[in-house]
Image (cartoon, rainbow, N blue to C red; front, top):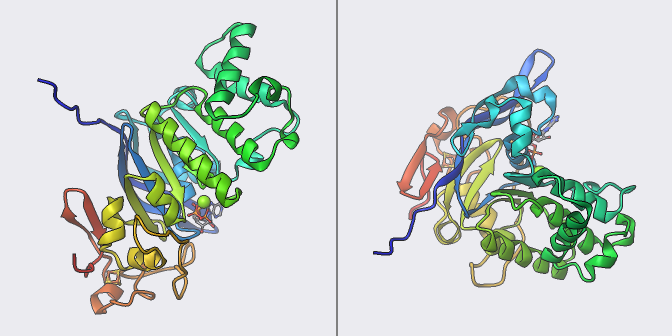
Length: 329
Ligand SMILES: Nc1ncnc2c1ncn2[C@@H]1O[C@H](COP(=O)(O)OP(=O)(O)OP(=O)(O)O)[C@@H](O)[C@H]1O
Ligand code: SF4
Ligand SMILES: [Mg+2]
């Protein structure tokens, strides 16, 4: 009998805390972040600016500033092995080959004084030492994969000779050169205009499906979440406050913050809008808080919310929320 295989868990993050030393205090940027991603799955990490999205993505490959390393705890298990416990050599083997990252400001990821072909070739060298001829073919293939027109002529181009959209595709070609199992894409389209953004997202989605690659997609834009993600983690002030399949996040958000975030987004199928702004501001980094971190902005805040930190409640197999009084389902 032909049975469908359940995808395995690829990445599992458990109680991740990342802090910074400031004077005699440690300020927690991330405070107990836990989630997992399965092979081939697309997980969105969404939240307002400063909620800790980039820090979460950067932590997976230990790319956060060195000053945070002594104040990082928890587990980041990739294929069952804790990357936080790996030495630099082991981690280097994962970077590029197994896990790639497109940084939040991809335009600055390209080296202005290296030709495009050389930069892509450098990424391909992660997967062996091909001959010069093979290398040129592989570079052209990598550029073709991200639909760069006339790639043979682009290998000799300098970054400044390419449009923003083309530069973005080159960054994608570099990240995907070694066909990673997990791609972490941190707001990869913010610098692009809407049409180019839509094309690039479609390309990423197609490649993700073709290679059965898992995707951690970091964004503040719920329109992009709807287009790209199977499941979503909503972040607030360094914590995950809700995790659910994308359809549930749109149709039945349980956390009051999630509801406020998607207030301007009518439906998954309808016209998609950008994040709406919510009155008030999240607590500042290091600000002492009691109870629920969202309580000062929450329309449903009650006495208990102001004094006791909410526990994570499992609403179903796939839906959990960190709230004392979730929205009715
Ligand atoms: N190296 C650092 N030094 C000081 N503060 C930092 C550092 N890295 C992160 N932070 C702070 O930690 C918080 C989370 O930052 P992070 O960049 O992860 O947020 P983000 O959700 O990615 O925000 P954005 O949507 O603006 O990219 C912010 O308050 C940020 O200022
Ligand atoms: S715990 Fe209370 S304040 Fe926090 S989101 Fe839930 S209802 Fe609002
Ligand atoms: Mg960020």
